[in-house]
Image (cartoon, rainbow, N blue to C red; front, side):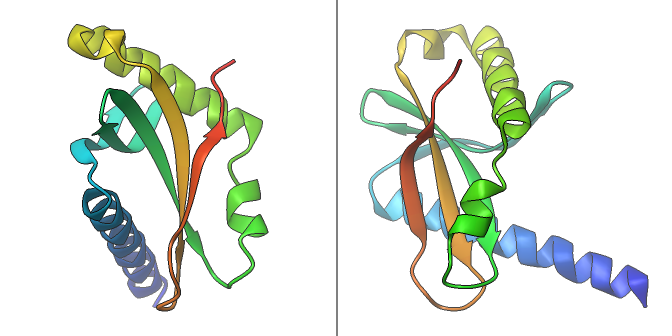
Length: 124
């Protein structure tokens, strides 16, 4: 039974990420990478918004209260995202000239709207 719950959680996560990607595309962003993975971490979504590179962390929200999902992007998680972004930039030098913005997309478990936190954190 635990295996079925594990698969359901993965599918729920994939569905949330797909909703977030569709939300970004609908807002005019061009998706460049999904689930960019390196030994330093993972980037959920990487997109271009005009001349800006957007690195978006997708979080599933269990309720309308978004504090829990946003708060789950800890300093340690932010650091891994920044390190993975540096890896991405080293691998794709053409992206190095773009300013970078770190966003969070809080995807509700129900049909409520997605909360898009632009500039959710800064690289440090």
